[in-house]
Each structure stands twice: as C-alpha cells, then as structure tokens.
Length: 318
Image (tube, rainbow, N blue to C red; front, top):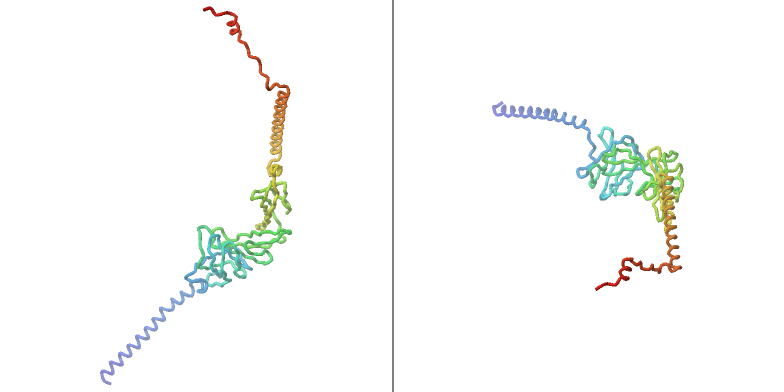
C-alpha cells in the first residue's frame, strides 16, 4: 500500500472516531436537560398565551355547577377564559369562555368540583386591593335566576339572594357561591326604609306603615340565614301627601328608641301650644272689649303741673 493511501485511511479512521465521540457527547449533555424539563412544574401551553394576563386563586372549598363571571364597574367588556388546574399546577383544563361585562353576570360553563382556578383575558384590568373579576358558582340551577343579580323567591316574595364570599378579600378573583336556602333557618329579619333601619321581626311580614311618613319610600327586608347568606326583599311604598304632618309625627314616634321620652316631649309641646293659644285668645278678647267700650280711643286728660298753676296766679312785675 502506498504512503498516500495509508494517510487517507488514517484520516478516515480519525474522522470516524471523532464523529462517534461527538455523538456520544451530544447524547450525554442532552439527557440531563430532558430530565429537568420533565420534573419542572408548568402549566400546559393551552392555558395561557403571551398576549393574555392570567390570574389565579386557590380556594379553601371546591366550587361546582354553573360558573358565572362579572367584571368590576367601569371596566370594558373583554373575552375571558376560565381554567381549572391540578393540585400540582402541572396541567389545566378549560371550563369555558365568554365575553365578560361589568355589572352583569355572564355564563362561562359548567364545572365539576375544583379548588384551583385561573382566568385568562387580554383586556382584564387590575385595581389596587381589588379583584380583577367576580365569579359566581351555582351548584343548583333551582337556587336562583342569574342576570344582573341572583333573583329568587321566598315565601311568595320576589327577592335577591346575596351569596357567600368563599375567597379571601385580597385574592385576585372574588369567588361567590350561591347555596340553596330551602329548609335553612334564618337568624334575623330586619326592616329598612330608604336605607335607615326601622325594626326587627321574628317572621316575614309586610312593612308596618306606622313607621313611614308621607311620600314614597324604598323598603328593604333583609333576611339573614345561619349559613351566612342573605336575602333582600325590595319594595316601594307610597304613603301619599302628608299635609297635616300626622304621618310624620306618628313615624317619628314609632322610630324613636325610647317611646316614653318621645311621648313626654310631645306632651310638653302640646301643652305649650295650648298655652300659647289660650294666651292669644285672652289678648284677642281684651282687644275686643276695649274696642266695644271705646277704650281704645280714650285719652287721659293732661296733667297740670302745680308750679305752672302758681305762675299763672301771680302776675309778672316788669
């Protein structure tokens, strides 16, 4: 074999050895990176995108059933997606998506019990110390009809159900859960007129009109249940015009905390008014008496000064 052939064969063997070494090194350095990527917790790529903001919440109790969303007042409508995450935060599943609006509940979807949730939306706006959105969980569709509020009926009255807040006050998402109030005992029933507390009652009854003055009043009957939920019954009552002021006095009497003190004050006011009328009548009668007897035009004679009289009896000596 010639020297040139030997050199070529030697170079070929060297290239083959270097290629094998390079392949082995590449496999060696790729294996740890692959292992690291498999153990690092991460949300799957379909949960969020680089152009959307994501907000999370870990609840102390699971939510299920129909899920609704409402944006804070003053924000713009935006498309929002809701996801449920696994406890290890390594995977997620989309519950639903909808165009959320402020001051109006929008249906997102139905969910099985979940505790870790995430909402994603490019137009979500965050205010300091405020939730980016409100979620309402409705386990049973028979609990209420969801629109701007959670509308329900109670003992024949149309009412608004105020669900419990099950998230923390500082969470990014405010989560409410509306539970059924059937067979749930109530702890108190309070009556309000124009936002002012009137009285409490052991049963749900129509408003006592004795507490209302003249005019139109916005009545609210608030029923508090032992499970933490509340029910508001809103009504409008028109008492008509109160020209005499009797309705005002009666309502003030019923609203007063100490009715004996109020009764004593009103008695004193009535006594003073009677005395003023009596005094005015006396003065009026006296005036009439003087007019009838001509005393109002009577003028007393001039009083003569004795010194002036003496001066008249003695002539002046010039």
